[in-house]
Every structure is written in C-alpha cells, then in structure tokens.
Image (cartoon, one colour):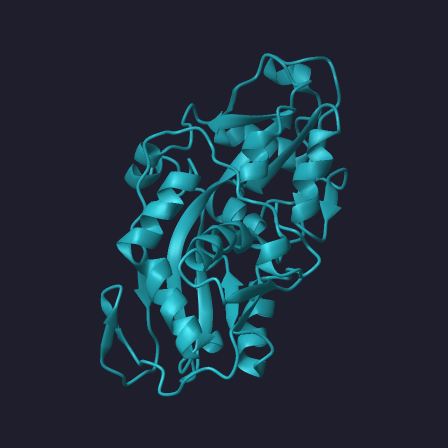
Length: 303
C-alpha cells in the first residue's frame, strides 16, 4: 500500500513484483470539452502551451489509484530524474477531481468514471487500467474457496452468520464493509448485492478503504470485498475467494464472467504543465502500459 504521509516518491518504497500470470493492459484516454489537436491514446487533446515553472508533480485523490501511479512515476523518473512526484494523503475520487479543479494538485486519481456534472471544459479524464474487486477471507476460514452470489447476499444481509452453514468452521462471520459512498461498495451493489439489499447491522463499517485489508489480515473468521492491490497478494493471512466458481483473471474479466472491477484513471487540467503532459503521454504509451503489465498480475484492459 502507498505511504499515506504525502512524502515525495524518492522516499517511498519500491513496488513489489508479483507472480507472473497472463495479463493484458491497453490504456485508454477519454477527453471532454477540449478543442486541441494532439492525438494521445486514440483521442484528441490539447497540448500544453507553456513550460512548467517547477518540476514537482502533486498527486492526490483515490487511494486505489496510488499503486498504479507509483509504478508509473517510478518508471518515468528513470528518464527524468529531476522530476519529483509528491503524493498527498489519499482521499476519494471526488477529492481528486476537486483538487485538480482548485489547482491544489496536478493529477487527481479516480477509481470510477467521472459523472457528467464532474466534467467541465477545463478538465480531462484519462483512463489507465482497471483492477478487480475481490472477496477475501482470513486464513482461519477453512474449507471454503468459493461463494455463490446468493450466499454473498445472505452474508451481507445477515441471513448467514456462521461459516459452518457454508461448509467452513463453526465460527461467527466477521464482516467488514464500506460506507455506501465508497466506490468498492457501489461496484459490489451493482454486480451482486443490488441497490435495495439492507446490510446487516453486525457489519463493521470502515470510513477509509485502506484500513480494511490490514484489519482483515489480523482478524480471524473475517471477510471483506477489497480492491486488488499488491498488499492483498503479499498478505499470506488472506485468501481470495471465487464467486460462482469464477476466479478473477485476464480471461474471466475480459469475457465478463467476473464483473467486479474498478476503472482506474486520472483527472488533469486541460492545459497541464509540459512535465505533467509528458508523464501522461508516457503513462498511456505502450511502454507505460507494458510496465504496468510487468509489475502487477491483475491489471486489465481499461476499455
């Protein structure tokens, strides 16, 4: 997980290299309300008209985007070591958008498609990739490696409260959940829970998504739906469950068999500094996308 203290990239840890599996990333960029003529990632966007006054790039917004942006920033610095990337403490997608609008940050990470009312003539959205939302359980939950969508709904509604009902240990299910405005919860509802399902009052709700993975890893008999990040793979105490016997993979996500995914992208001003502009070209180039391929086992085509 990225450092939460807003330190510059040079003081942050190197990204982990996950096990190699078949993967595919094809970055896509979307543009709104611009009249420029430079082509980037298959769409027309306006090139910057002036040189930057400094070489610090400030990044904020959705925590889910930080790992991807860290990987890209580290690779970009290999060819432009004079550039510093300053990661602000993460907030949410809306915070990234507002930060760019107000000029507080240069790049706002977003983990959903921007709403129409969030797009203005001054903002550009670039889609970078997408990651799966995965259901994880603590290693103490033995004998269960898959859940049906109905079982998932029964756990979240409180109709199933003991793992023994599902063939697991005789222990109460400890359910970790998000607030309703978190992107993960919205995707979970759109794909499996539905909009009207009432969540059990016994669910432990976290206001910040980055706390869920760490807490699940130290809590016996726990379960949570989390965005797939390096830390999830690195924590031996967590097991990823399949849903309806479908495991998240390149093939199942591309085919639509595994529907729970979060789109990762960035919002920038429509006239970014030349440094920001150059970084975006790098991030959406075949080289940038290949770097994402090589440093994560579960990044997928953003289209």
